[in-house]
Length: 400
Ligand code: F0G
Figure 1: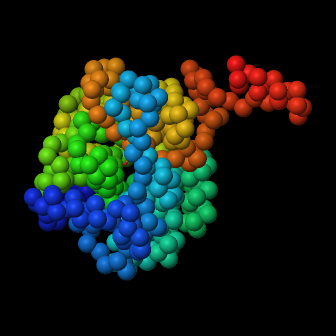
Figure 2: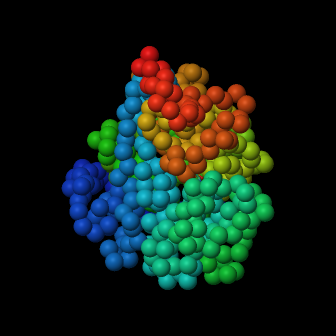
Figure 3: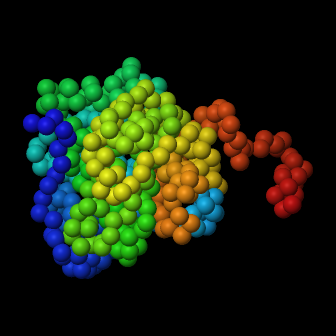
């Protein structure tokens, strides 16, 4: 026993790239059962073989890949695209893992499901468990979950425990307790979650007509997604869906950067720390998928960067004023691209896909942003008298 996390290994349809690409294309825009319409189950050959009647799906995925010249110019990366995973049914990429995880829970007849969360995993688990009719238990750090996420988790009926401790304490508690209590654990330590999250990569590659970008940038917290991206790319290469590997850029918040610190030291040792950042979704000091994320960075010749809270909030603001709403943790990916361009790591002609992992409405957090020293929000409400003259002054200012 290695005490490491489990991975799903199965027969990759090697060298069947052209046939798979045709099958995936034929399913685009399909109507009917979720198992056909879903942007996760479209890639079933690369994810999980499940009977349509077992699949628990809203459906999810089918998120846009957006080219926005203003965001690209700000990042200094003309060929930047953003993949908006906040457009999933519960507003984050977690839905892609959860449809597979809860399908597996139903297949094995789980009596209850559980997770620890900074808020998005719990919102997603609560929704999919409700869809499947399985009771859900979630552990969140008391007072440290964005309101939108807490509201979802409660609305979807999960038993919600606010633990006096941080996310790392919640995860360690639920990992200890779930085998003893016979509850099926659905954090990303569960390998089926990662199988679903791989489809962020498959879908973006299909949107790019299977032409590999130079870089894929994503925010990194508990490192499940980084691990999933590495596995997806390895398997896409082996299946012949793509013919070269893009590089993964994992971006952490400076105050929650154990993976970046370890990367800077050549991954010689695992690092953990007490985490502090305005980006509550990635406020994680002891990431569970550390080892498999190291494999993802190594096999993609990737890199790990950290960006501070001011850079994260500035990125969120620039993305927002371009009409694209994402939560602070998500903006870390674009902030990381900007930092990597400035450092000369990403070249001016490189094509980069930055993943926006969660929706703006999850964590509007204007107060937190406004209270962070060094941050000036570009747009704030203007209070006026309820008079036509006051309104006219504003209209004149808008025209000027
Ligand atoms: N972005 C968002 C919006 C997240 O919610 C998370 C993780 C991440 C990025 C980081 O992904 O953990 O796979 O490295 N949120 C988890 C949660 C921890 O509980 O919702 P990761």
